[in-house]
Length: 303
Image (cartoon, rainbow, N blue to C red):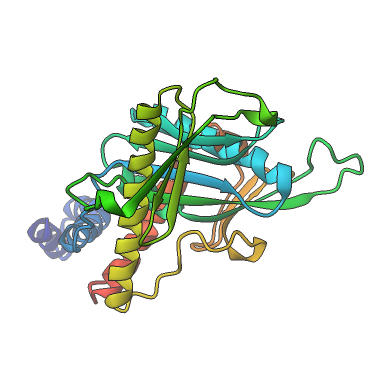
């Protein structure tokens, strides 16, 4: 392509006006194509994230804002699932903690498919929502937050858990409002004693299935702890994925009155919030991926 471009630039000096015009047209076509090819080549030379091809454990939790935050947990979770369906991914709910009026204090799912972590890994952080709650008689806009964690699924070969380090308690499942889900002690609480990491799972009627799902979440959380420890050892100062859920720690704002989504990390603003909440997230994810690829190239001195 470089040779073709150089050849056309030489033709600009020809006395034949028609040949010169054709050369100009070819140069206009080749210049951006060459720049794009060089950019893609540089990106392909960047060190690969070994987790990019992995499935993801997606966790969304209510932060500041009470019931309004819990409602948005459910809506944001639905948006991710709609995107997963559009992309051809599969998902399985591992654990959920519903509230009485349709929201969730927390919901955790396994998302499986091609390069799921590569596409979703920049979604982790505090997501802020601004809107008028249905219960607000004065029409005032409220601000609440949810936290999102994106963790690569950890297989048993990725992280070793000593059974002696686990305390497993079983208890009776309870639904929203204290209603009994079933009458057997099928819910499972797993505590990893060395790190004091606690996982509870009660969605299934089978104690075995709840334990299996709980272990998936535990492995993912412990692998994430290990990844963060390794990053710190290599002087990586990246901010913690979830933070405290405080309103000021947001990575993104969903402003419903203005139908606007703003990603504060990259200065991206889109006025298509209803479509995004229906799973049309491609523009958001593409923009984040491009930004962080360019940042990586700059860090490598390849820009």
